[in-house]
Length: 518
Image (cartoon, rainbow, N blue to C red; front, side):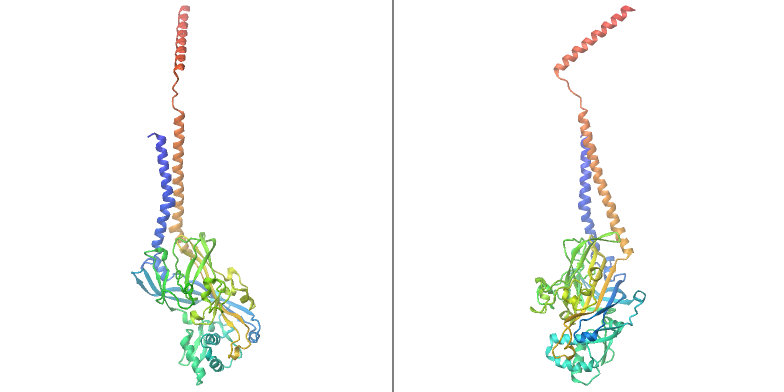
């Protein structure tokens, strides 16, 4: 084999090998290794991180103060004043974990712990007084109207006794009392109607904490703080199939829900929201199951972003339009009662007659936004989104936000509601934000992306080196072709011989003459 052919063979082999490894085998191998690392095997770094996230989330609480509550009680448009944010450090962990080898799954309960951040919250202190719909009063009225309308007269009779003859549905309360310390609810009474209502409330609400057998207190979050949630999740560990890591398999032992009116809405789909599989593709929605809303939600791809120099994909989440989307019709109360775009009724879900939405009714129907004054919805402050690194499936930056509202309206047989306007009245919204800490960003960059960047350079250098060898071989081949000896024809040979003889004769003649002269 000539040198040119050898160079061509070597160069082609180098280039093809570089292409095969650089664009095929190596990416596949990296994905396989990432998948193995993402699996929730007991004792691994990934499992430890998933069980107890080693850093705090940013948790913010905003309340809406109704500045014209007396007008609202008479049918006026609510004027809202946003109070907040109240900053908390939120720590997440999973408790009572049990592994199941037979189906590669693990069960657990979720626990959140909130610690108040006084410095970030300042100048607010939590002692501010706000006017909000009385959560127990409104919750009682709306729940009974929906499920036990026949006992509304009993409720109407009990309200003055249990709520100290209220002149409105509103309550003046300190922020911390509303959130954590509690609003006192006194059931010390001999009245039959009031006693019956107290018994129902204590049995069916999770927000009351007993102080004495007859006195309780209500708070929005205290019963959840540092306490495992009552719902048991079972998710895939992703050891045998990394594409299913974190995928919710059952909730409270059931493979589907029973809150809603149809199969699509009762289906459990996606992860628990704390872990996602690797190899994220923009064309695919990212699903997660949200127990607060009792439903699975798809996150839609928005575009490419960057977080701390790492390329990410941005996804956002909306609640959809159950009034017009056939796939979401099963979330409607019935065929004639369906909320408009961007909100969700939580009565069937959590037994609480409130409505969830994005804050300030962002991405919700304009009727809800126009029903109150003082809102300013915008995507940056009120949207739900996350930025995820697609190769590893790691969320680097996320904002999860939810607002709760009471539906105000006239309710027959309840005197205190007779003049209320027909609006959705927001009273609180929450934001759960997370940014992956710098040391973990550095860990991802150093252990993965720096290596990938180095290998990316190597594959191009090797490919170009192989191409250069091939080019050299081609050049050498043409050079050898041009340097081959030319074979003369027969006629040319005779003419050449003739000229040669003549030159010889002349040479000899000249030599003789020289001798003669000497």
